[in-house]
Each structure stands twice: as C-alpha cells, then as structure tokens.
Image 1: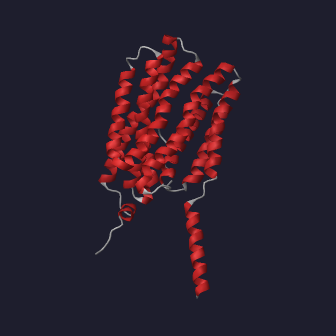
Image 2: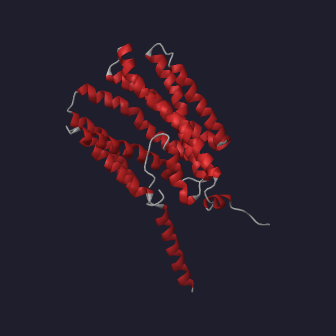
Image 3: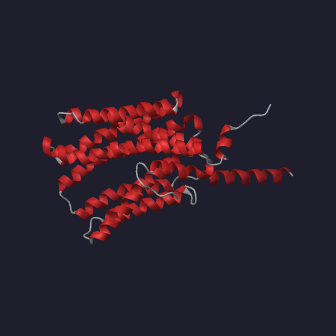
Amino acid sequence: MNTVNVNEVIDKAKFTPFHFKVVFWCLIIILFDGYDLAINGVTLPLLMQDWGLSAVQAGMLASTALAGMMFGAMMFGTLADKIGRKKVIMICVLLFSGFTFAGGFASNPTEFGVLRFLAGLGIGGVMPNLVALTSEYAPARLRATLVTTMFSGYAVGGVMADKFHLKPVIITLCLSGAVALSLLGFKSPQPVIYFLVAVAGASAIGGQILLYSYVAQYYPLTVRSTGIGWASAVGRSGAVVGPILIGMLLGMELPHQLNFMAVGLPVVIVAIAVSLIVRKDRAVDVDSVTEQKLKAVKA
C-alpha cells in the first residue's frame, strides 16, 4: 500500500485556479480587515473634538482595538487548530464587521472603546488564520509571494521570501523604514516628504507582511495557526502601547525630530531581533555535513 505525503504534494504542486481562488478570497477579507483597522485613525480626530479628548486619551482609545487584536490573535489562532481555519475566519469576519458597525452608534468614549475591543478580537484573529490558510495551500516555491500578495489587500508590500531570502529582505526594509521615519522629522521639500512617507509605509507594512510569511515557515501544520497567532499577539502588545506613548510624546512637546526618531527606534529593534534568528537551512547544512562525516568514519 502506497502512502502519500500530503505536504510534499502541496509543496511541489503547480499554481492552479484553485490557488488563485484561495489567495483572492483571503485578499478580499484582509482588504476589509485593513479598512476596519484604518478607519479608526480617520474617526479619532473627529471624536477628540466631539468628546473633548486629549492626545493621551485618544491614544488609549485607539489602543482598545489593538488590545483586542492581541487577544484575538492568541484565542482564534489556537481555536483554528482545533475546529478548522475556515470556521474561525468566518467567526472573525462577523466579529469585526458587526462591532465596527455598532461602533457608529456609540454615545461615549467608554462604549466606543468596548466596541472597538470586541471588533479588535476579530481583526487580530483573522490575520494569522489567513496567513496559515494561504501558506498551507501554496506551493513551496511561491509561498512567500502568495502570502504577500494576499496581504496586499491590507497594504502594498514588496514581493521579493521567493527571489531573495526573507531574512535580509526584512532587515533591509526595517532599517530603511527607520531611516525614512527619522528623516521625516526634518524640514524637507514636499516631494522628498512624499518619498519618505512612501518608503516608511512600504517598509513598515511590507516588513510586517513578510514577517508573517517568515514566521509561518517555523511551525508545523498542526499548530501553525497557534504559532502565528501567538507571534502576532506578542507584536500587538507593542501596538497597544504605541498610541499611548505617542500621545505622551505629543504632550511633552518635544522637537519633531526627536518624536520621529523615537517612532523609528522600535523598527531598528525589529531588525536586530530578526538578525538573531538562526536560519533553518543552516541547521540542515550542519546536519548533512555531520552525517557525511559519520559515514566517512564508518567506512
């Protein structure tokens, strides 16, 4: 009786209309997920005026959705490995759609914050599952490309995981983003500002997208959603603190240059952290060399 390795069959498969459908529908979901997260930044200035909020209070209000994303990534990433990716994705879509709609009827900051937290559960929960679903069905030679393409509904990143190794690409993007953010604090001509904003956005969001693809390669199929979800949740803990710190920086009335440099510092830390990750292929090379030495000794 012949046994079939399903993972090997998927890894060596050719790109088919089925793969296109998986990427397309995941892209549509992440598009609305990204809109749901971005709309919060559009409404906050209006809410600050209507409710008389300070910068720190507005930052704390923005953090409610990010806190929900952190817990959602942990909960729904683990749940998906038990009941299936597609079921959890549908639950998350209902969560972030329903509670975002309800947020439009909030009458005070507390009510709005609670609704944004609940919507954040769905926003954070759907991301790792979309990554896991796309990664599982994608052929190995196109895996990073398809995951990044799927995430282009969230923001446009670079499709570079499959021509170059993900690690140097992520480090380069992070360092580029840090430099661009720091330079934004200085007075520059308008075209230069637009260029720096484009570089910062592509580097920050593109690097984040590639990080999901990078992390997915380190977890086996049975716990992939759990692994990506918890990794995402750790990152979201920084996102929760971020708006509050930004509000505090604005309240301190520091020079613009220092504010932008402070924002770029965490991206440098990301680059350092990624540089410390040991590549899997190196471990494989060491194992193969050791095996050859053992064979030579036995001979």
